Amino acid sequence: MMSEPSRKSGISQAIRWFDPRGRDIGTIAFILNRITALGLTFYLFLHLIVLGQLAQGAEAYDGFLATIRSPIYIFGELLVIAAGLYHGLNGIRVGLTSFGIAVPQQKKLFYWLLAIAVLGSLIFGIRMFTA
Amino acid sequence: MIQSTSGPKTGETFWLWFLKIITGLFIILLLLIHFVVNHFVAEGGLLTYADVVAYYRIPIIPIMEIAFLIIVVSHALIGLRSIILDLRPSRQTLTAINWLFVVIGIVSVVYGIWLIQVIVAKGSA
Image 1 (cartoon, each protein chain N blue to C red):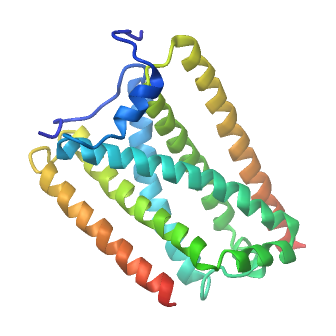
Image 2: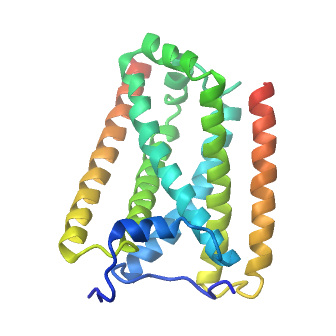
């Protein structure tokens, strides 16, 4: 099953993995995909735990909603939106190229999806902080 | 150059990899629906406890949310596992992680269904 060449420690490999120096654009796309994945997974479980407040009744939940209306939480939500936009759009690109579709155009696709993700996050950010 | 294609990696079967792609696609679709329904169908958005209870009285919503939950949790855990595979876990570690993730997945889904059922029960009481 698993081949085991040069088994470096997991930790040093994990750190090397986040180092963007000397990487090409495809690797940067991949690293961003992973970082957003970790962030979104963290948010998913946080979301599930926090929604448990719903079982405590109206007072608990509405109190919780009042708490998360402060700017720091709104900023956190914006990070979730930005990560979701990037991860979803990049996922479409990875899915397409995995099946051999648009392989030669994938660099161009990456720049486009990055632009859409940044622009989309800006629009969401403006709306969230001015609403 | 960007690597030309991506695919299953060592320790990840074809079907698990395929499931990750398919659930990813479903998440995009369901997330769009989730957003539209949460913000536009429920007038002004789900901003209070009463809004949420009323929202879950729509018959299709609990089913949609449960499906969404199962798909998101699956995608997250398969994805997390593929990140762990890059750290070259030993076979025993990987087996432990497989079981741990199966348990986390089942607990999350059961918990989510329980929570939805609580909200639905409040709405019909």
